[in-house]
Image (cartoon, rainbow, N blue to C red; front, side, top):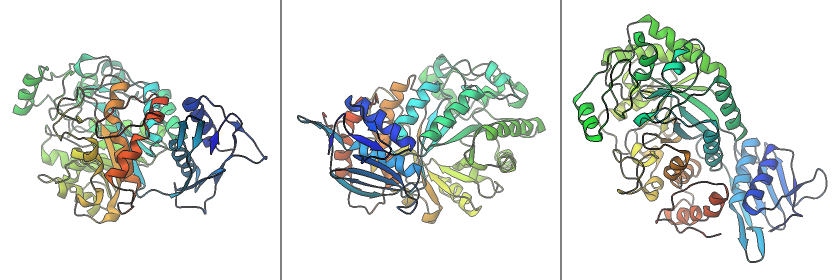
Length: 481
């Protein structure tokens, strides 16, 4: 179907404006909008047409996209944009007949803005590029040992004293409340729900820089000392900004009631700004917190989230606590072959009436290197090429009912990424692999590596037009146009 300056679009949805802008960025052609006349591209919302977030797409002499809801229409438009091609005769849409809906309701990406800070415009760029792959949740990791990244009125020193730097001493920053609300609204316009995370009770050194009375003295274990020496990084010092990457050395004071006043205030203020149902309270790598104290904290912190009207989320280690609030969602970041007590910890969320989000580190962690010599990323979980990121099954990792798996989230931890360009080099194309794992049923004929590598290769011209700084992995046959 030819695309020219005479091509007409009909549809009052915001998806129409997004389609017109995207076609212009890609081709230089500005489509026109019509209200009643016969259109070449029809955008329709029909709740009876498909499952939630689903769509149908027919491209022949005319293109018709029908979404079950606004999200489905948006996703149908993304697929249509992937079918836009240029040849010697000009621009055209490939013929297609598609009926599509997601396998999992939760399809997420995480951006760590604590180890390195990324400003509002950078996060919007990340939202644009990942929502186009039909991800519908954005998890923002807003606090860690290296910095605190969102303003809290009731605890103003968090951003005054603990936001100025990032890992390695790089510049820091934080989001004002208006900034945060702007990001939430922008994500919503791309049908992404924001999940804010404040990591507790560990990963809390930055809190201690602002409010020393809330945090214990650093625990300097042998692994931390050895890793710091190997990397040439400083050890954490109480009350001083931490510039290294080490983990497991910090903990809030579990037996101080002031700690829970802090947790409640932060959760309340985040809840007021976050229309989505979740608040993530961390819980990973709390090596500086004795188990009995961790259990006590987990029960109280998850209950506070419930009392503030949100569903608590936590990393899978919080499943080691017997009395986490009922309905808490666990995020599994162990490996595809679980180690130690990881599987039992994850299963406990299900036993408590919750569910699980799968972020198996050896396949989904976007901050792992593609190859041993790739200049960005780490290798502690695995070296993850694109095929490894694609060829795994979320329901086969843990011994829990399939219905307990909400979906997939692909995290990007930011120890080694200083710019959004570097983030994108690690994220793309592997995020496309995770997007398909989360969206497409495993038994679908096209759900194969050979099919995927051809289809993702065809996205190169689209990504270039959108300014996505993807890594041209050798595994993929990239299209020139």
